[in-house]
Amino acid sequence: MSETGFITIDGVNLEYCRIGTSAADSPALLFLHEGLGCVSLWKDFPARLAERTGLGALVYSRAGYGRSDPVSLPRPVRFMHDEADVLEKLMSEMNIGEAVLVGHSDGASISLIYAGGTNCAKVKALLLEAPHVFTEPSGLASIAKITGAYRTTGLRNRLAKHHGANTDIAFRGWNDVWLDPSFKSWNIEEFLPAIIAPTLLIQGDDDEYGTLRQLEAIARQVKGPLETLCIPACGHSPHREHPDVTLEAMAAFIRRYVSA
Image 1: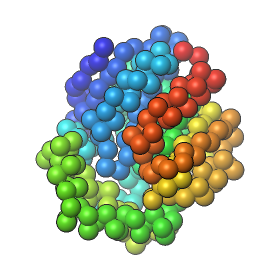
Image 2: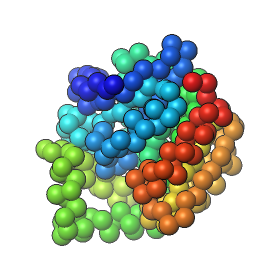
Image 3: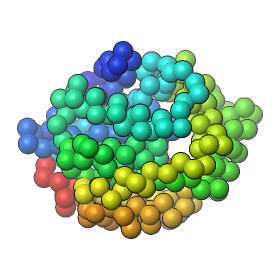
């Protein structure tokens, strides 16, 4: 069973999809997408994880993505901090008291900011794909490279199937801020020592946007139980490139650390 619709946060309409329901004493799976993602780009992965774990799930598109309202550009360098504030309001409006945050890329970083903030007790676990806590020259080079691909290949048309009128906003809102010279000093490691929730880190060994230094920094500083999985022959999106491996790792982690 699923429900789709829009929720208004600070006057902005955000697209969401709610899948099933959690028991009264169980957390919900809350999915936070990548820098070019949205509800539809998760495809059936949230539903499959919800089915495997018995937990309800909420998937949403941040402002400027999918069918959510557009945003003004350029995004500020602290946009992920701002999105962590939106996440808190979203959970309140959707009556989610506790959550297992499933974050991918930028969504994983937003999850870390939230979990290391003042509302950390609401986070029962973190399932993070390709998280980043600081910038790396190789990752920035890959982001610069995709700028040309957006103009000269079919990338824009592929994104338009999911973002519609938000396509250019979604791309530029991600691409431009990461390539802003002031973003080179972006770092969210200050939030890591406050994280006590069990954390699963998943990364492809061919990830073009981040190295294993990201996972090492997180593992070194968080205080809760932590497990890592590096998937061979996998790039930046484990749940799309190796969905079964990613699904099993997340479901097993939830069985170990979260009561369904």
